[in-house]
Image 1 (cartoon, rainbow, N blue to C red):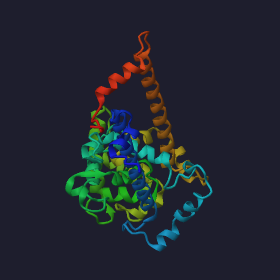
Image 2 (cartoon, one colour):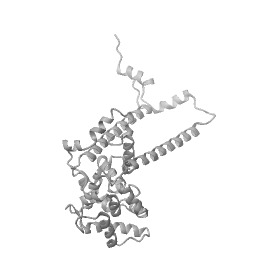
Image 3 (cartoon, rainbow, N blue to C red):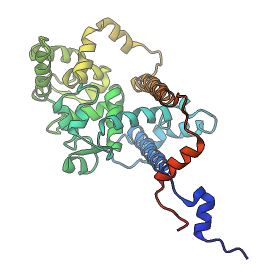
Length: 336
């Protein structure tokens, strides 16, 4: 009868009866892989709620489910081999973009970001006042963000989807909640001026003369055409189809300046067009994914080149010498 011990089994699994650095590296890589899978699952869940849970209750009702495209999208997964062809909810490419953006901001990699971290998104494009409103709890569930002053990956998914597609109904609701300081369901002239003040300060710092608030207000009233003059409601912003321009004007300087440089007739033509097109989010995710893949490919080439330069020599290390050096990396001898 065989009496193999744990030590004998270890010698079979680990030649020399020892764990080397490579073994621990594999364990760390597995841990990172599981962590990424966990974040991907969370992202899918958040995207489902972002699109389907129109009441913002945190609970999807049967009515909401029936009105959404979720069940149809789920059925498509049975037919489509490449999941990236289905951009709603499950796309790995979209996950990769969101996760990389979060990872860039999460400098200490504790899977949370604070106001300072979030303000650095897109080279400080968003104003400090709108960042403060996000962390005030206006658009996040629970009190963790407001109490602890940090945002989870799940909350960041909502932020990024809303930031990069301000035409989306949920995005319009997201930013309306942020700008509605007193929560009365109406954007007053005071609230609009409050957010525009910081935009003016930033433009002046760049040497750009800002439009006086009164003149800007006339433009925005003409853009939105609210039902009640002097008061803008969520319904007004959804109906006007220009919410993305409205919001960028008050808290995203880079996009506001981009809108200012565009032909207004071209903008109106895009709004009036009945031709179906990609959402702003799908366009953004596709462009960013290509950039990230190109950067990753370039980094791999650089690393391969440095590796070859290091080991291209007449005095190559023999396998025996390499084995002797690796023995110095032994963590423990399981045969002892």
